[in-house]
Length: 358
Image (cartoon, rainbow, N blue to C red; front, side, top):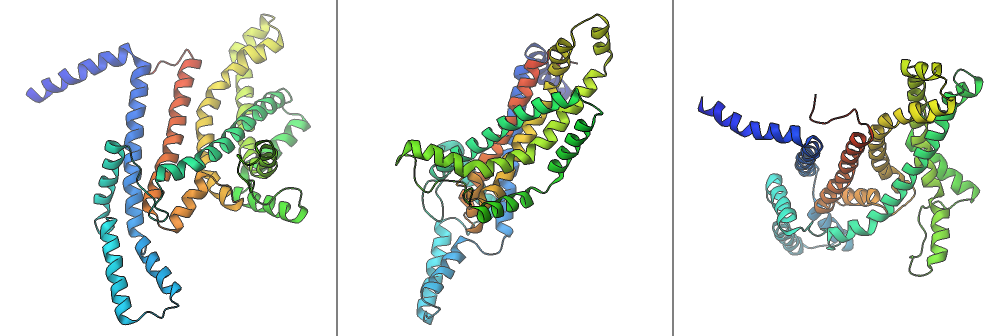
């Protein structure tokens, strides 16, 4: 009885707050959920890295053996092994993975420090910061181009439903949506190598500070094929979704009623049917952004584009636990923030949605 009384006393204020501030309560709930997901994800990454054979200290040993062509004496080998064990202890790699994780988590929360790379000894925040802008720029340009093109084509083809043009466009969009992304990247890379029209790499070979104007034009030239690959990978499915949503809205009774009242067809399309296509797109845009960031890992490797996806690949190959975890958590954080913003935007755009209310 006492427990139920305490439970009611705790839940009743929360229920009142939820009814009074539904959107704020929803945002808070999503932030808490995001924090839990990041916590579980980090724990899983540390566990998986623990299961991988060897660690970064073993790589150091291999590099020493290669440097001496395997000609180390028994005494040298014993000294090297002792050194490596001391290095492993200094880095905390001799502790259980959960202890390593909670120590890293405490360092991040208390000291706002992501640690240092176990390979380069550079701050992890610096390494991520140098690559973050490149990935965000590439993915945001892709998202904007996909959005504009998908809405323009999706709305236009919905007016041509059933025609040969519509059937051909739908088939082409389906092919793009089903085409393997990695195969498209390889084909574009082969196209660049065989024709010479575009560079095989996705980034200029000189810094922005050296020649800003030349860098901008060179960057546009280098990024064209990676941008084209990301665009083709997302535009097919998004265009089909918008076209299908428009056709569904145009078949609704309220559209028939508007037409019966003599409302202009253009107004029916854009003021009513088109407006209602925003809801599924806003929801889908978060998944699209997540797909762009996850797909950028392969894209950045193939085109040698210096983004956080390629940084993740390099960190995994080198078994740099600090860099792998921080990079993965940061990418996941960006994706989750995008999803939360999409839900908030949906609540603001559609007045029928009231989070926290029946």
